Length: 116
Image (cartoon, rainbow, N blue to C red; front, top):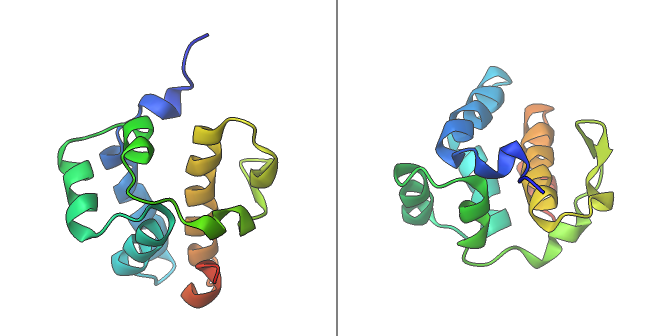
């Protein structure tokens, strides 16, 4: 079975789209980075390295230092699918990130987005 197309997309190609989506709603690149740091455990240097190496989403999440234990608290719909019901672990991680960026763009406070 072929891999889903998004798994092989370079994270570096999608990252600017996350930032643009946030900035269109008067949010910042730093807030996008904070969400990525919270979800994946990357720091600024690690994130920058992933972008420079143009790693795909599969590698980006496989190399993540520490996925946040509260990521399972992320609930809701992304692309018409409930994130908590996604069976493929990699797809679920990607959709978790999409959902968090959506919440940021919708004006939700960062403290609420980053589940305690």
